[in-house]
Amino acid sequence: MNLSKQTLVITKITLMTAFLVAASYLVIPLPFAVAAISVQTLAINLIALLLPPVQAGLSIVIYILLGAVGLPVFNGGNGGIGYLLGPTGGFFAGFIAAVVLISLLKGKKYSLVRYSIVTVFIGIPVMYMFALCWMVYVTGMSVRDAFLAGCAPFLLGDAAKCVVAGIVAKPLFKVMNQYEENRVLSEKTI
Image 1 (cartoon, rainbow, N blue to C red):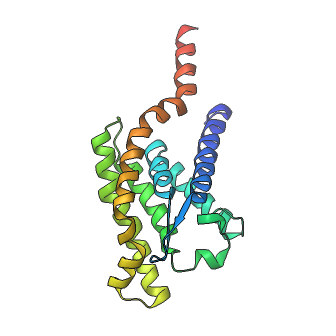
Image 2: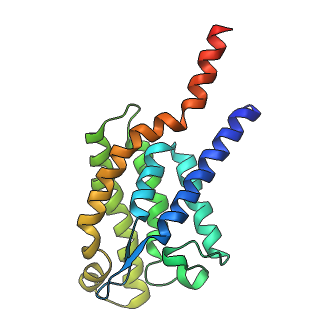
Image 3: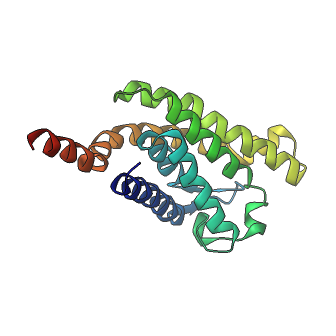
């Protein structure tokens, strides 16, 4: 991989990580739920739809490491190991697994239907499975109570964010890959 390609890859990963951090600040707390509504799910899905699996996973790992060392990058500006290991900590492992799976299964060409199916029926269940298992382990709640407190309030909103991510992915993918397309065109004309 040449220096220009490496720079482009690093830039894409960094931009997606920064977008996830920004999305984590946009929260609406729910008094009856363990977690808050955020734009994180939209960001997670866009990362998976825009980047290849390894780059998508790396973007999430960097985000988690930034928060683990105490930077305020998690929901609502939280950070630190305590937050990472708290009741909603399972979402972080779920984010990694979901972005890799979505990225692997999204296909080579854009399809809103396929993007929506993969994000809603693969990504969301994977994130929720990790979150649910962790919440039960950390809090001692029953599976039912953990689902009602940490997953159920977010299902419809997360499904809607998946569809929005699929819609927004098409123009963003073009913009993110414009440099490579222009480079290939210029090489053909030389």
